[in-house]
Length: 82
Image: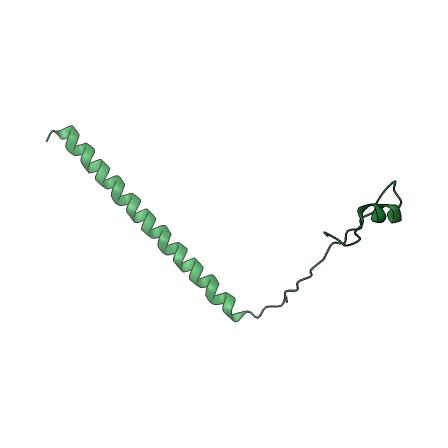
């Protein structure tokens, strides 16, 4: 192995080692912060109660420009979808 290739390999190994150590450190910090927030959340009683409101829209169907009695007589059926 020449000097330039061994220096390159050592540099790459050092980059991999530092990247792995950094990722491991960030993972540990993340896990500690998530655990701390979850533990503090359990002790607090909720002050907001959830509520659900269901609104049902209404639709009015109006025949424009025709007499409704003549329309029902012409169709011969006054049932919806019939």
